Image (cartoon, rainbow, N blue to C red; front, side, top):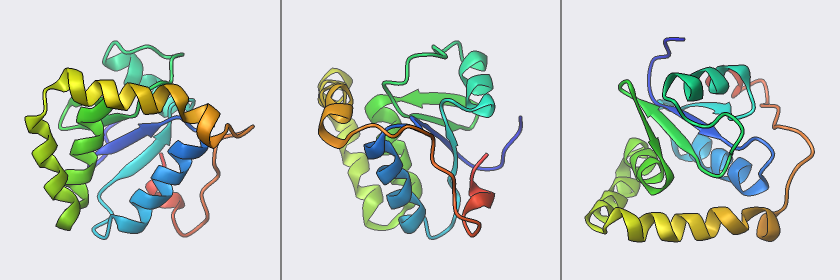
Amino acid sequence: MFVNGPIVLFDGVCKFCNGSVNFLIDHDVKKRLRFAPLQSEMAQAWLRRFGLPVDDFDTIILVENGRAYARSSAALRIAWNLGGWWSLLAILFAVPPFLRDGAYNFLAGNRYRWFGKADTCRVPTPDIRERFL
């Protein structure tokens, strides 16, 4: 289960989440991030390893350096991994987690209503397949 670099675990049927993954792929110029839908066997194994729910997909998870980060902490660490101007979002770590996660939870709680839900998980194109686990 060892994977080099940070892994983004995302809701594979959430259209907003899939759009976010597309954004990350386009902006991760160093190609450090790897991806797996939460519904996949690989992601399920990571969730079990960290004692996280395997059937509640209301957050993005970042697995990095032997730790799992969720909600706004995951999102900000992902932005940091993109580098460049995106890493400046790390300043938001100064905001108390209950406020950051409150905003995150509001978006996550409405993502299906606002953006929709796909019937299946995304299938990556051949040129980015190597970044999916």
